[in-house]
Length: 355
Image 1 (cartoon, rainbow, N blue to C red):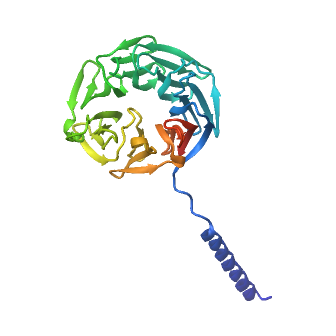
Image 2: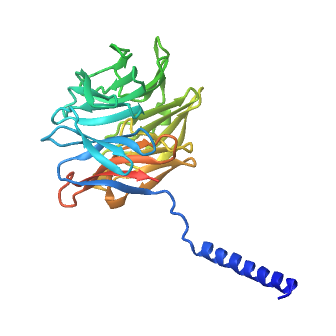
Image 3: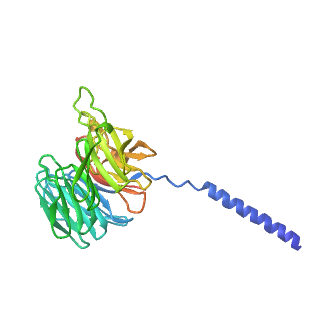
């Protein structure tokens, strides 16, 4: 074969190979868009997952509760596996919030069903231990470090106040709120009713956001109020408000503080919100779990692109908690699959992931 003919044959073969590779690539299915899916399901009629926290891309914790005949449980994530771990919870208590700064510094906050007592529990890498009890209900918490923890009490049925732990002692810092979020020991945000307040290390300063909340609706009972807050930086603080319309709840509003003023950036949706259960989406937005109105299935509200978008969850999951997986746009959520024949009862406790 002449050198010229050999080059022509090689060229044709190369073109055929390229064409074949292109056809194979064209035939490959597109990557699935991020979506909510169940990663752990425990068949049960007795409990659901009431709080979750991610401590790394493949590590984290979920807490089972709402079981009147048993104490809450703790489940540790390691890769794809979730394993039940010994947990010194009190019978009937629910873990209402969890937070962490590392896999060896995880905190859980639990209330009794009457809101008259609460418990703070800590994981230091080897076992869980109860470190503090309060007379009153915990509405939320911020963990800045192993020796820097903020707890925000609920005002109903008894006022707990705001408490700070410095690694040695717990100190009450001011008055009653329903929840809060701390950036540092000299910059803490909290909310109560139609006000948000800021702690500068010495005093609390109140700001009314009443005009930014949904208006009172004539006729049905409704009490517009702030229901959650999340401080990201001195110039980036988010709050969620709710019109609290009778029966169906809502509408929801998203408020933002830019370091100077508060503004309303979105409105829509029904439901009652879930207090401090707000999670950053990693792209400048938020995830907010929403209980379904009047027995309907719950859903996620995704604040993205300046709008509140309703996201349906698999198997009509009732999700009550959400937490971002550090360093990613992925999320964990916890809840249960409702029993269609028994209102409020589960058929399975589930953990979901958005990825």
